[in-house]
Image (cartoon, rainbow, N blue to C red; front, side, top):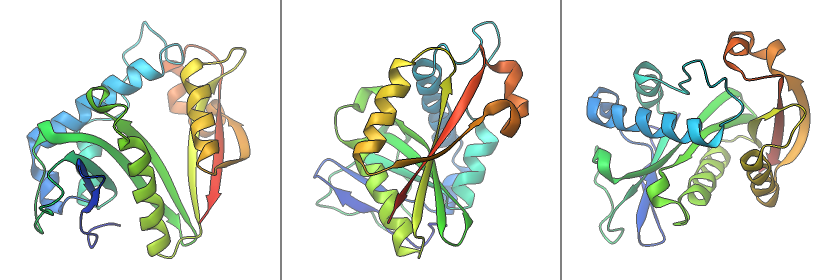
Length: 204
């Protein structure tokens, strides 16, 4: 959905944008993204997933698919006084984070897989990725962006509570809740216990 969008300079330290479809063939970039995404989710969602079963948020095929379809925006360290040339693919080691955008219907863009490499946390990358996603959704004619978070039942997950508060400060409002077992039955065996999901939306 983002093949026509050029990288946008952000705060003098990094750029955010959709890489060209050629990135879908860059095995080093794909492997780096898979490793970072899985490492971040494993740490941040500790306690939600069963510790005695393997868990991976994504894999090479999924990341390649997202890059091919123009649904994965990246943030990469860069001298923003020199905007990236068309067709530029960031070096894997320069990638600071990513965000996935999916448009299931005309008015709505689902935003997910917001990940910041731990080495770059505190740099504003997460906020800029969200801002980029919302601006792109609006430019494409969408009226709403939507995020979905998993929450364990019976106890408060510290990271999830902080993340929910962060989204609320960005203007997201809870619109519904549901049981993971009903919407994502394939995940049930990997969960540590009963888990719900919360869907929040922001009007653009």
